[in-house]
Amino acid sequence: RCCTVVVVGFLVGADLYKDLEEAVGVLEENLHDKPSAKMRANAAGALGNLVRNGGHLVKMLVEKGVVESLLKIALNDSSVDTRRISLFSLGNIVKFEMGRQEALNPRLRFVDLLSAMARASSDSRTQRNFERIKRILQQKPYSDDVTR
Image (cartoon, rainbow, N blue to C red):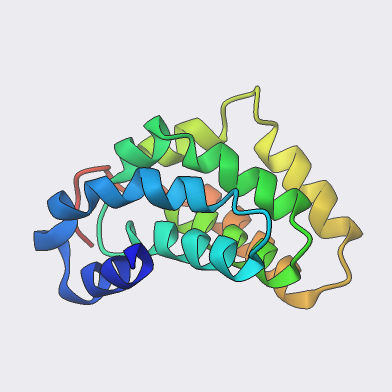
């Protein structure tokens, strides 16, 4: 249900983001749904969609540990689809200042770990999603409160 709400929020825009704050915690919890790769992938995609049109929820994503959770999934999930989606969502989050600051926190070793993962991966979509993140990190970040 939360994934559906987030898709609606993505389509409608920033007006619903305030109402979607509650979904962040539930979606972050669903990233850890061990039996269901589909649930993890849907949660990862939904979290990335929350910042596709603006940075209104970046602070909440950072506070709930979403960057670290998505990084762990991108590196370790058993499902290649879930890893790909997590990488794409990380790219959406690091477009914004606060998301980028969290990702580049030295304790996460974000770029080093993702670089090693991309080099070791034979999956071209995983490699493309990592290259997208590298390009985004070279650009000036968006302000967290800006709607794109």
